[in-house]
Length: 513
Length: 110
Image 1 (cartoon, one colour):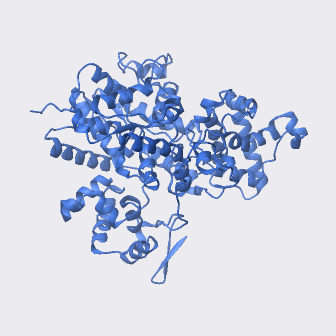
Image 2 (cartoon, chains in turn brown, blue):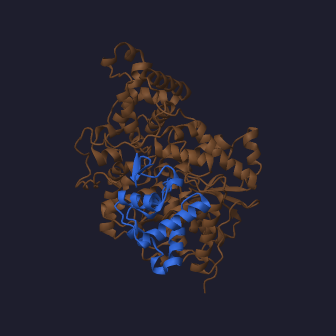
């Protein structure tokens, strides 16, 4: 690929905030979606020719969002610029661009809010830092709100609990509304709504890939592990990111899920219709798309008659499943309306609906129903990277912090060598991989490399001190991002993999001597 | 954007992928390879032709695993691995080889 050579920023000797470099990343801008991509998902095709029309439409939609989401208005009003968030963003730490400080990024929108939606800003704009919405401001929104991965690390440190990701989502929703969408995310939204998954894998390609996997696993283990597709009457529906069918190392975890189901004697199936766990509708803050994509899972579950829904290794998918499926699709406890009841009557109430694949596997381990040859993983010294959306927006198990413990419990059950990275970089304070929230695009590789800096610093330490050679993950975006960026930091891509890849290596399938 | 081959102009997208799949021919493939700094050899064409055949059948590029397996079956197990493919297509067999084959770029969480 042509273009300037991209280099990883040097590690910081002491991890202090970097010196400010104004406009350091102002030139890093992802491709804008064309009319075809925009219109396929119901957005305006392109920006209007006359600015006034765009201006009025943007302010109008901003106002709609403010009246629709009370939270957005609170977040616009509540910030006191205390500065707690400034040095918590991986993109700021990696780039030094002050507009990547969360407070400054939000102020790109907040300044416009003050101008049009507060009395002081309407009367005395210059006194309260209020700005007119101009083409330049809108361009700035596009640039910097696509240099945010909606990871919400800054929110952990905000004394007011401002959900900064929600502000990014609102800005992107306004941009989409006026015809200024991002190619990467919106093209994927088109594919999932039309074909059923982000990659655009049609049913026959899925079937061919899964049959190939069955052959491979049979060759490797001598066991007929099945990877069933669209089996009516199966007990479990597994919904997993489509990257699991396509990319390395993702597919190794898919092999692992199948082995777990096989060892447990579980009847299960994948679905063509619901062949995507991910839901980029959340990334652009669009409720209609979020719901439309989520409804495919409801439809598949009802059609196949499954008793239980299990979600594969995907960070934001688990947030959507855990936090939003209940109201979007009726999956989850407590729904009393006819829409929810239809599915609740079918799903088995003995299980948590939906279940994360890590919860599923850990339950079986605790029941003594899975057996492992831990030594098979002895060539690996493993550390675990908490994915943002799992760590900060959901839970596993039945107690706070289960989402941190359960994946680590699984790793320790299947391997002998595990070490954690520095405490200020894991659990709820985990650093984003640098590619989440719609940033995982080739045209943003520069900011992706920069944004990976804090995680790579912590990883380097455990590599140096403990000989770590495996970065275990539970998110398709993390897997793709790290595979691509670790070479910039001097590591091999093969050091990156999934938790269920480790399970796959060690699990006994019942044919051992 | 566009690429000129033998006096004819072929439309490409922002990232240099051919817009109209049906316009592809080997000369266009060679020209697309040049934009990537790849010099095409018989080994490169084996991969590119497999991708095109697979795409014709399934309307999508094959998974990396499917590709490596097919290449391994055809050219011997020592070539059925992603390292071999990365030697041919340093920017990644999926994205770079698809571009040369005139296929759309696979995108998603990959």
